[in-house]
Each structure stands twice: as structure tokens, then as C-alpha cells.
Image (cartoon, rainbow, N blue to C red; front, side, top):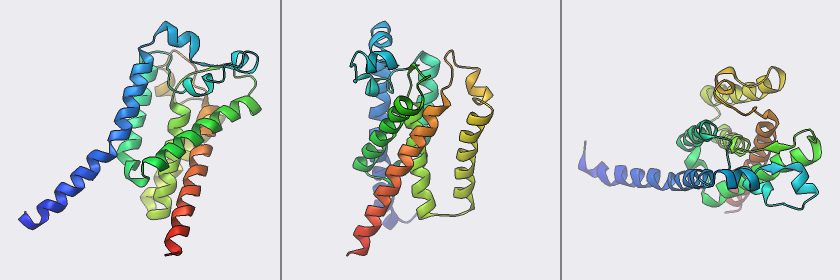
Length: 209
């Protein structure tokens, strides 16, 4: 390896390390919230009655950071690691925060407006699907090749399978809580919408230069 390329490789490594800071911080938050145990189970989940009748609106946020048990948490941490490995560099920190917020709001609004039968919910999977959808939107804009189309198609197929057939067998069998697939769909819609808006703004800003 030529020494002239060493600074470039070091710069790429530093960029990669920075890209992992936010996902690692988020993972630590998820683990820390889980340590609340029974206190978290009582006060943090999405509870339709507590929200609408009791005014406990903080549950609209905290529900996404608390998990039913360790297996539930581990699945979402694995998913977060996958999203970070694939897409962390597609948006800056402000962009990912906007996508996270949009995904959270989309799940909450979807539950409150369209899913009155969902009375209780915990977990990061809905938001995680929003992050995944946003990353795929960036891929489709930047590198619309066969591999990108395949990954996007598999993601859409997963969402469709959950609606028509039910949860994927290898995940449902490891969880003690039912998979609420509606959260995945609403999260994906919110994440994709935020990503399209961010990418449009980036393109408009570039065109004006």
C-alpha cells in the first residue's frame, strides 16, 4: 500500500467511527431505559386509555424506547446495528433526528387515528422500520441499481407479508409479546416521507448553487 493513500484511509476510518456514534448512543439509551424494569413497564408503554383519558402524552415517546423483555430488546438492537451498518452515512445527525421524530409521530398518529384496537404497545421496531425506509430512499436516489432495488423489494415484501400472513416465523417464535405489524408500516411511511423531504431540500439547495 502506498503511503500517500494512508491519510485518505485514516480519514475514511474517522468518518466511519463518527457515523457510529449516534447509533451507539441510541443503543445505550435503549439499554438504560430497559433497566427501569417494573417502573418502566408501568409508566412508559403506549397505553391508549392512559393517553386519551389520563393525558399521559409522554407515553407517545417513551413507548418506543421500552421493550417487553430482553429478547425483544436484543432483536431491535440487532436491527439498529444493521441499519447503522448500511445507512449511517446517508444523512447527517440532524437528518437522522428528523427521520426518527417523523417515524415516531407516524406510528403514534397511526395508532391513535386508525388503530383503536391497539391498546398497548412497546418497542423500537416501528421507528426502526422508519430508519430503514429512509436509508432505502437515499440508496434509491443515489445508486438505483439492481441490488438496491432488491433490498427495497425485500423490505416491501416483508411489510406486505406481515399484513397478509402475519409476523415472520423466526421472529415471532422468539418473542413473548405479539408483533404489532401496523407499527412497522406507519414507521416506514413516516421515515420515507421525512427522507424524501430531506433529499428534496438537498437537491434544491444544490441546484441553487
